Image (cartoon, rainbow, N blue to C red):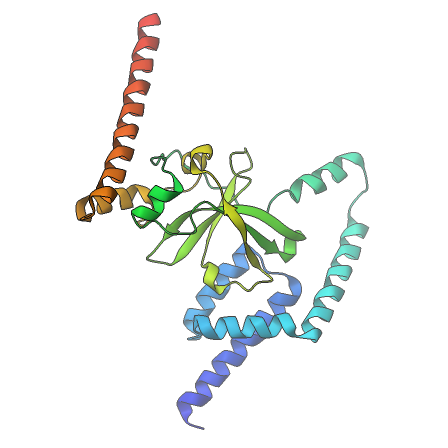
Length: 252
């Protein structure tokens, strides 16, 4: 075996060992970020990462250790916690969504129908309902894909959308296995969402930037008209808001 092959084997073995430990004790958002950085340091490709994760999913020893660790953790937590009404309520509330720091923004993007999104090249998964498995949080959580960054190939997964608990994460969904991530049937009506007013600021590949890029490059008249009609509607909405503000000032 050549030196290069030996080094690659060492790097993959090191990554596999850390991945196995985290698969047993539970993957969190922070650990997902750490694994992403570790793949770069150890030269582990996305294909190798997927292969290793699939091996972990089918490894009976990993499943046995994960189950045993979860029971041990639950037992230890039960010993430490006081069982009273306030603690019980707090425990239930804390499991309502993955424990990530909510990130909010007041940035607004134009509303478009799914057909218009596809027409101008916005990522096909925008507005799709999904389920994300968080072992450390005790199961599956519902989310909606609200944005896509083509530079990093990451989608924005928004949890508890349109609620005070709304939070989101950026993730490369191509690295998830079927036991970690599911795309549901159907699509959320973008006109009923406030995701773009509460969610993350648009990335370089977000719809608001695609509108401008598509308008400047569109050769298909139908595509151009789709962009034009959307921007016209947004302009009219802004005029109405300004008029409402002026009326409010006059009343004062």
